[in-house]
Image 1 (tube, rainbow, N blue to C red):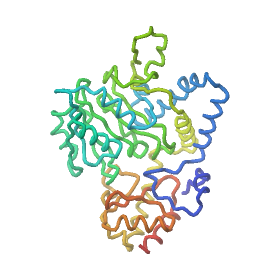
Image 2 (cartoon, one colour):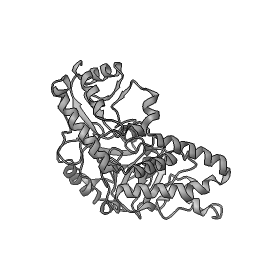
Image 3 (spheres, rainbow, N blue to C red):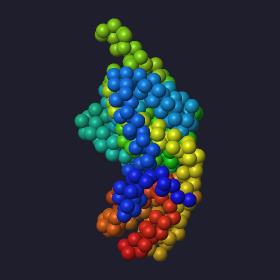
Image 4 (cartoon, rainbow, N blue to C red):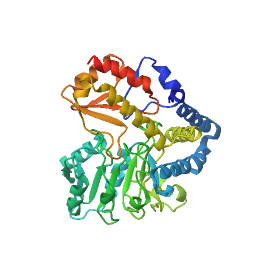
Length: 381
């Protein structure tokens, strides 16, 4: 089955392109264009009072959609921001420190750049002590074993470089309001896995995600799930954290009792509009994370079948199918990965490379014809 009809604008903008990087910049469906226009039209129509609509209707509906997809049933625990790095800064500033002024962070050597770079810079400045655990088998157990000596535990649910799935349940269970805090980076699992953060995890851990990848809503719509009671007064704070209490006397710093306590300041709301428009499209089409996953999984199996007699078939697949929850991309390790990526790009095929790993991402806008087209290119590598 093909769903290309939902992506006519993105596909039509570059008809000769074979975009196999749905794990990175997922192509935007037509519905996102409608959402963008709605945001502009609301600003023109309501002017100063547009925030009544955004914060009174758009924001709460987006919270509810995210909470349902996560599996938490806690809309009030969701706060939005422009990107996850912004949320990470607020979160780290609020995290309790067990001993001394330095925050003790336990993480992995496979985290995405927004966290990896920031942790390294804090460490360089002497503000934090960072322990990194190598990504590999039994990662959850090794993290749990070292957790006691740390204030903040940060781990991805699906590793962006290898597609490795991490069982975060035992890690999330470690979270306490007075420390340690547990943060799950779910950017590669949100809307790629069904209910990636069920209610039993949401009481003791944070979860970061956003709209750039499988949400199909683009940038500017990152979110954080905030467990109740964790960080009631974040020190890095914007005036939206007291949006409902703007009548406080001067000099008082108020905070919302829910996730809005981590809110920032004035923001571009178009991402929320795009997100809701795409969500409505999926609902109308009867598409869920489960059905999209089934569509992608079938294409991944077909891809592996046709690659067997190509150079790519000789590469090491880091995330084989059939071993539990799976990423929306396949990760192939080879010394030729960068060369292959460049050759494919020359032929109008978009993949990407991380070190010696070529990543091939499939999404709702792909069908069997795309797999066959890629197979022809792969034979010439």
